[in-house]
Image 1 (cartoon, rainbow, N blue to C red):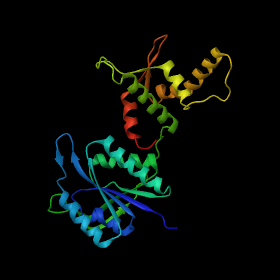
Image 2: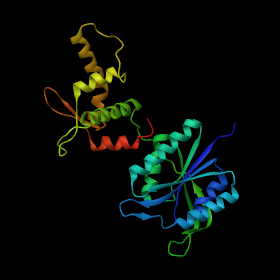
Image 3: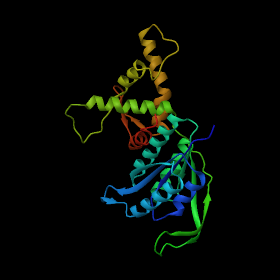
Image 4: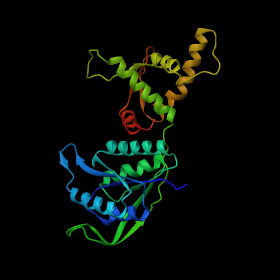
Length: 268
């Protein structure tokens, strides 16, 4: 059975640096991102290179499925989010699909996001350079012979899927709590901890092996089990913040927590 291969590239002022690895390794699908910058309203200044590369690839690989997409080359969260969605879609079709990302094309931000995505979701990255680099001349910056390198990357500790699911659940509870209500928008949104603990068990995100018949002991067991997840989310990962109130403690999602929710939006 042939291995399915997917390539991801980002448009730039390059021809062979983008096309040669694709022609050499003949993927089944190519996701080709073109640029825009939402903050300034700029569109891809190198769209001519996309059109040239598209034509060359279709000429050499007529069966290649080329999917054109747009991404903000300055927005880390948007870039990694779109990569994660591609990975999810392709691996739902075939869990053994190998995904290759060209980190030498696009912008520095697309390269950073691509490296992080490769560590989180087990992708291959490659960097292409040439025997003649000419950033000041006309046409592509890289000329001559193209050399493909696969850099070594070190794994990062991906948050446990259950932690991400609970964080998403907290977000949904908070949004539902404020939905359709008037509230002071200068204050941070929250959910009461005791309500969260009950909902976690009601919805089956956390469960007890043995349920104590005595209500007070049952509630204590639920509280202790929930701490297994809420403590690291607050103290180690810094995804949530729990107020210091003696009673009716509040749970807030931190800025980092909201960033994590965006990064893993399509993965859980």
